[in-house]
Image (cartoon, rainbow, N blue to C red; front, side):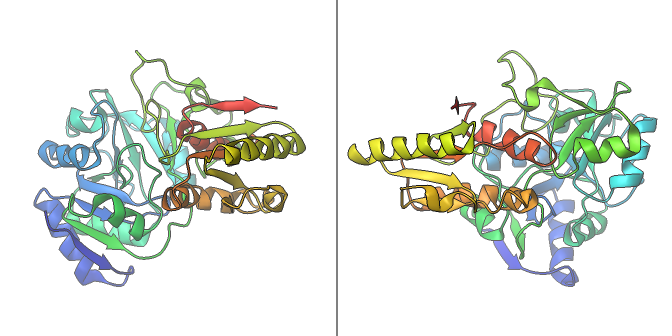
Length: 347
């Protein structure tokens, strides 16, 4: 398959309309959002959505998020729960996905056989124009090979999906850099299934109690069906095995330095995922800073890019500093734990 690649901005209506014609015809288009790049197809066309799973190598029990251009979602859900309305009013358009009871319009291919559908209105102007011009909602997971770190630049998308999709459009790096927060409101409560830039604390300011599903920080059981993208499988992973080291930061540095020295003696190339505050304390030369702990939003935006960077320098093993679980740090740790396959050392 020949993939058309266009570097564009939100003013390039001609290329966005060309992409929309591909969506209408049942094809696949990679497009930018404020979170990560998405691999989109017509959410109402089961055959089109199958192409998403094939291009990514994505398991079919992993549901897709349906992206919309406006608040008129009545055709896609049986009803809109009251708490969903409050969240939509406060956080749409933006990086928040809301799970609601699906209507018959949405194919089970999109929901992985579940009776609920995940819906989001992205903030990115290219994304919303593409959806609007297409005239249909767009189902879109992250535009990467399944299991790899999610793409935050158009170059990441080209690296993973060139020759596997009809078109790739975009330009700038994604602002948020982590996938959207996913909440389930279908049973009356607000439950976070995947943390993101819209945090528990932000939602509680407008809606009261918000709960965190145990699968956010612990591994989903093998026989459990994922209710949202990113819950079950090893995700966001670099090629080299990743270990998260948690505890007092001085002990973390000491542990990683000792492992690096030990690995060097064995000829094992060790990558270190550090922060601005600690990067110069590490002995290894293959170290990358995510940014300052004082600016967790920057760390979140850099995470996937840094994980992909370790693939480029071909390390054999990676050690990463752990983070707390407050605010957006919850999302950072969720992604790191998935990338590490829950391989965590406490010191």
